[in-house]
Length: 267
Image (cartoon, rainbow, N blue to C red; front, side, top):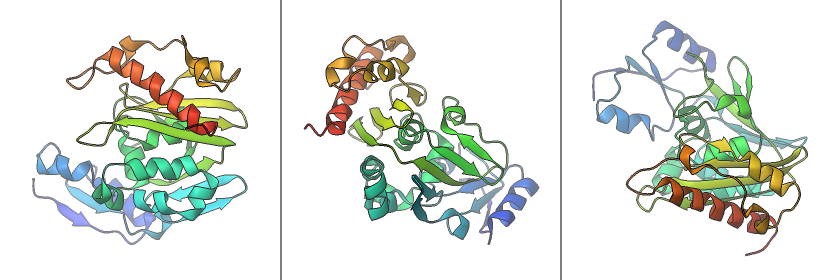
């Protein structure tokens, strides 16, 4: 790890000023990705700006058909929140699948969404539920936010404050985890919203994406059989030592069917 300066601002405004004053600074949330990167000397920030204690980034609120979760909220807190379990049970279930107990007690919603790891779980829920990412500067719709491998619409110095999830009619998540890391080799979030069906896929491609052909098929029937023969281009998916593109395409179909089974109450 290279030498750096550690600072803990007392407010969101102070954090933004630090980022503006130090262009090479990095925000520190749960540190689940950043800290290992620093240890391997793959990053050399001038400052670490620790925002985990900022009151503006905490809290879970539900009102008027929306669920608002602060960016510094830990995965464990989302998984165990009675408010989340009532409003969007699938989101609580997803949070409980992330990593291991250490990761769930340190990692944060905002950190996961800001990093946009292609195998992370939260992006599937954010995109699947058509959530809104609220920053210190603006609001960004999920469909506009995710822009590929570790890439988002966030600008320099922009800080995620909270994520606002519209409460769906029904939603479900299923994933096939990597046996060592727990990351999704394929994860599918299916939501029945007031505006129709949304199907978001994580882990299988270079970034989270909507499977729009599946959405069109499920608009006609919510039975898992409706996904038979639905187009899914394996050439657009990831391939590595763990799985071929064709294998991941099959995993996406299987996970989507499992999510649909949960959606309809079938085992």
